[in-house]
Length: 342
Image (tube, rainbow, N blue to C red):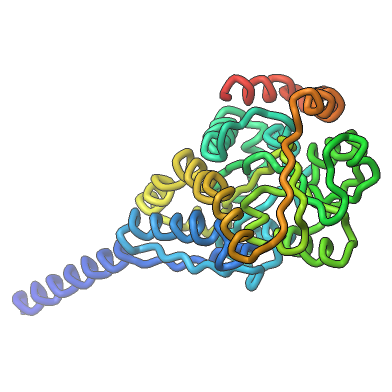
């Protein structure tokens, strides 16, 4: 009888042990909603490589399935989709949601001297770590990465923009926040369109042009419908990779730590570098291969000074006053912090 009891206890201990091991070795499968096409630089050089690094860092316990081209959630609905759990993870473009993350908008001030998107990603993450006011803007989700594009250039279909006078009255697609204020100050008419809709709007003449990064020109093939490139350092825009907070909190700490080991600062830098810093020669090759027209004009220093005087530093001051008027007392400190980090 005693032998039978001991045998039963041993079996129970083994079962409990096996149950614990099974729990420890549990696999986690997550969905990631992305608006970019599968052949975009974002997908090929940034998002898919990050998903692979997460899998490697977690020794295969985490697998991320990416749904590109808005097949899971529309780009404009991604933030809400992550919060509600429609998708576990989301690639978020914050230009869609004016005033939702107003403190973080400091990253989009015009004419900030970002030398590269890799450096911009470093600045973005360090700003997130430094300022609780920025962290609170993301309190509904878990922020995995935060990064910034290279400065946008102006792409037009018909009228070639070489001076401020050329820009006056043109309908230019921009993102929300400071980039909208900048375009209005420069005399253009800001048009807030989802990036995937910009191609058709350019093709049909609904808009005259777009302020876009070289990455977006490639990913959305804008070079097929617009041929004039005005090289002027407009605002950059910022993005985040965020996760459903309840899903994140349900993960064991070792999995969380493994994910963040390839996210956070290093991941933010890698997203900027992968998506943007190699984009120019890739766009140039696509233009050459397709035999598309491409007229490039670099705004000279004296003309650039006019742009900066009207659509640069005044936008900084207006943003600070607007933010302070809404109770965001650290606005000036935040702008200085970005400048110092650069």
